[in-house]
Amino acid sequence: TQLLEQSPQFLSIQEGENLTVYCNSSSVFSSLQWYRQEPGEGPVLLVTVVTGGEVKKLKRLTFQFGDARKDSSLHITAAQPGDTGLYLCAETDSWGKLQFGAGTQVVVTP
Amino acid sequence: KAGVTQTPRYLIKTRGQQVTLSCSPISGHRSVSWYQQTPGQGLQFLFEYFSETQRNKGNFPGRFSGRQFSNSRSEMNVSTLELGDSALYLCASSLIVQKTSYEQYFGPGTRLTVT
Image 1: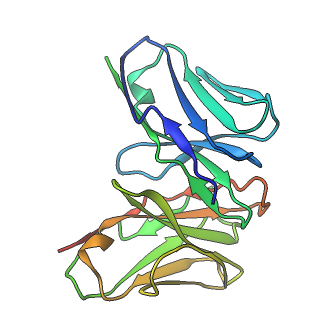
Image 2: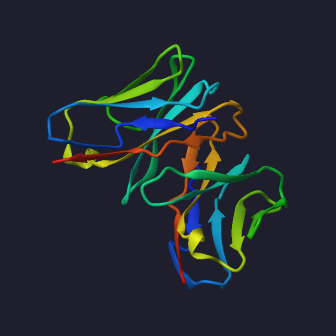
């Protein structure tokens, strides 16, 4: 079973600062998804990356997929309090099951 | 289009009891998956149903079971509840069933507390 490692576990920043969270594996991802989960709610899909080297942007969020498809990053520019949440990466394993990393808890304070 | 709905949202049960949770997927979605989320273990896959058949199963004891109905609605049941079953139980539905890109849409979850 491929293990997804997310870092850091926790990140606290001020509004307006930038941040980057990472998702890594020792094996190649077939594809990778990023989700954000707010307290008391289910995760919400942000993006799916499939191709090595792929970069996708979602407003102030930039997602990168490593060339070797073994790592991915999520960069948030000028973070806002509304960006607060648990950021999860997930990968579909060979059995078609979604495997999640432990997540990075991001707190953006005004 | 309505999202994934789960009922109830909150539940308190006593050790030894059983519980049934319900999930209604997004209209047209035929795949429904269940997850358990706890602070210590994170999000763990329980099982997945597609067209009323269990297609995938995680590493949980037999006390955890589920089923899917012809309208794609799903239920999961936990028998003989233990304190460690306290968790947020999430249901997710998916339209496109591709092994390489399995995008899921989650409901708000059912918060189960076992006392």
